[in-house]
Length: 299
Ligand SMILES: Cc1ncc(COP(=O)(O)O)c(C=O)c1O
Image (tube, rainbow, N blue to C red; front, side, top):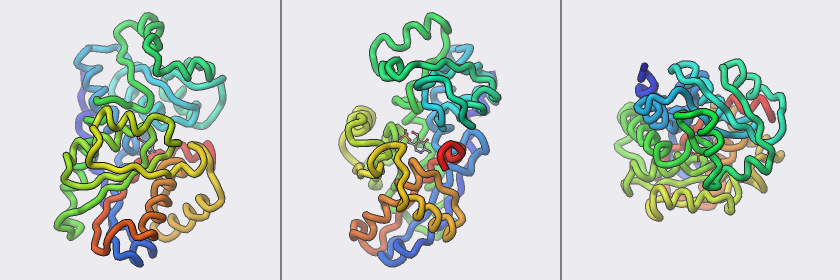
């Protein structure tokens, strides 16, 4: 079986110039995971890497995972399955809907099953996977968002990719990571890879009570990171200030932003920078976690 999925493309590390960063004398760079691949974009390939490896080692005929009808994770999974030779099944939240993401999943060959909202809420319960394992024997089941330790382990490569490009940026070192957290898997991966060498800040794209602090603590312990509220009233909420911020930031930087994770994370960073959270001279890496395909559904 091919293992081309082990060689991830290099994400460019680019200087990030914004007036509020300059005013606080914070030097920032953005690691553009959105540019690694047109389909398996953002943090998704990193999170899927070890899952794909486990599936390959177990000779699994296919991969099953779950998500919503704009899910970046399912989109990347369907694309990865098609490219690397795994059949894929997607378990979707709610009732059948026709969104650009859903159409892509079907075009990429993913078989879809719609769980009711109640059925989807049971995804963390012990017996959730049993009927699917019975229906798809030996398939590799991947938790929501590509989570768990396998997901976090793949994210260590994100740190390697950034470090390999510091010299080209003229940076001797960096001090801080800032990134969006949805399940907290990517954040946990960075914390594990940094092992206390640099601070990691997660901007929560979901409310506090969605279990992210617990998930990150279970994977990476309690040290080396901080979490910040960033969801602006709810996961899928998009308000006028956020839209204006996206417009202005895209205009200034030319970097396309996605509203639910990347833009909310950057806006939360602006608030912290303006509040003086980072000392002058801080060098900060902002992680662009991709997800641009999802924009078609809500922007
Ligand atoms: C674009 C984007 N950024 C960030 C995240 C958050 O990553 P994690 O679930 O690893 O916290 C996700 C998905 O969850 C995502 O789709």
